[in-house]
Image (cartoon, rainbow, N blue to C red; front, top):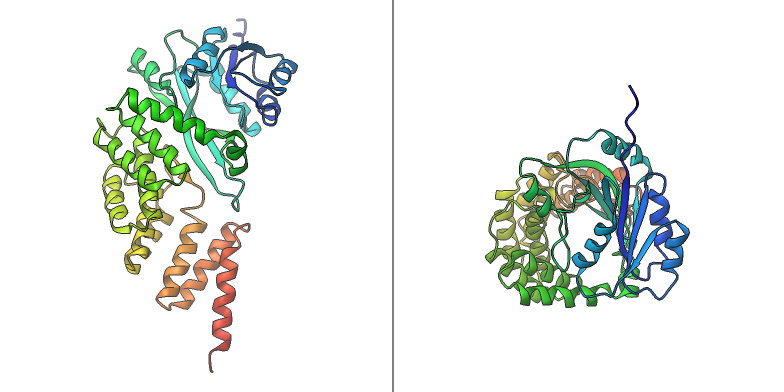
Length: 375
């Protein structure tokens, strides 16, 4: 029996002025890609030349403030059996290439979520980790919708309601929302314009209001963000869409920025009714109890963060169930003057992440306090 040929994979991307990040992106996938379809929306740097050096098929189109429209142009030109969707500020984790090749060669499914590791270079190693639909079979019916934060899952489910969209542990590293890159590319101004237009076009769309709220949050306009989050909840048809769990998380964040801990706690309680295993919501609720000076309640929830298994379907801030929960417990026990327990949790926090230096500062203060106490 002859061996079945490897299915062909098309990389589909849209780009504009990505000369700094594009080489690393294309290099991360060149060994598994059969064709690169790159749609350029108006680059003035060397992006097109770089893409050409990697053998990409390049199409140039005008930018019309619509991400779906541009992405669908790339899909129309793809000839592979599978589509891999990346942005220029992303890189496929090289250690996971074998898993991806296995899926492509043996899969009976239609589409796969990969894990996006969203790095923030300005912190001590913080990253958000969340699933995103990035690999699917190439069918003409599968197309993106939405001018911003565009989605393709609904078109796949519509054609194959009995097929599941499958979660994988394969990782894509995303670097585009570090503060430096945001400022250089003026992403927030662009996204705010598109998100505002989507709300005007679809005023009853929960997702449109959510996207606008997120742009206001990135601009630190939290009052505007809170208003749009609540409008999103008012328009919400159900809680089954994956992004809804993020909405509770991000609304609570906006409220907590304004020290509205009681209101945030009530929102988080509602969110935990739908998503009881979402560690980020547990951590936020514990933090609200700290803000309300309800330390024993906070301690219980921080301990719950540590013992709750992380569910990969959610957006997860790295460390909440590990070093950050222990660090927060150190604070709580210190407030109660339970120094032995405080020291234990600060030490544990540092052991779990040696790049996280804050526990060492707190330990130094405690040891200094003990040393200066009269014997």
